[in-house]
Figure 1: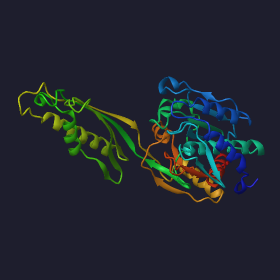
Figure 2: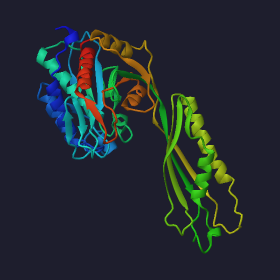
Figure 3: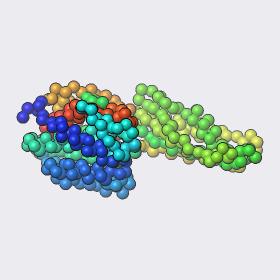
Figure 4: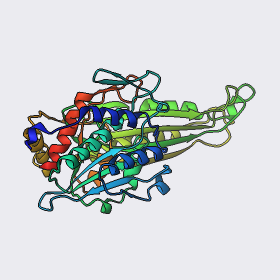
Length: 383
């Protein structure tokens, strides 16, 4: 069979995609989706999957699933990764198909993030089986709780992955291969003041809100440069309008493609907060105590950086050329399971699946893009 005319069954692919999307799988509740993926793959000849014990760490209904397919030992093994979970609102999804375009009914997400990838992998395996195509040894890795911090990938034992390189099918648009993505520090900043009645004796209080506001105003934020961003995403504090707020919790992040910049910006933010806290003065002499700061910064995920000469990129470039598909190689601003795999020494490129407007009720994907993604997966497996 000529590789350029790989026989994707588009209508079967569409049916699989709809069934996947209409099976609820919000983060932490991936059990039904794991069961469905297992059913669909095993019904067409896949061996039973290996499920790891990551649920004990992630709190998910199930662990990560890994399907292993023996292949031609003379070919370089390869893995594909995608995630089982979706964001909210993702319950009771009803897929609307108009021609080759898929959307939700409008009050939920669609779930093409990342079920367009799952559907493509299932269809690719069915094509390989139906036509007896000799392929490389393959692994399909389905992770849990990706949308809430890449938790499944973080809990996955990389020693379980036999292939030494692979592809995370998980990005918007089509024809894009992401070869770089930033590292991220997750920030948790707690400012402790002192409570007091705001009308009777406010002088006795120390407003954690005001201290936090001054520190935030002094801290770097937003787009720092072409490879670095800072964001303070949530603020929680105070109990009532008539009480001087004694506690504020700020959660944020620093992202950068440069680990040097990542650490420098993190320290600058901490310094801004410590300067405000240490510089506080009790102007009335009646305050109860002094303000305190608890500043925590944890590496959420490492950076990924691949070069055009890396084997994982050469392989997808050759595979795309074999089916006359044009690809663009780009740098991303977000994190994914690929960051975790790369950090474990497993070179992993991110491949776009065709999904658009993800994480919104306007999410959509086309059958053409999912079909082309399936062809690319097949070309990689047959390389």
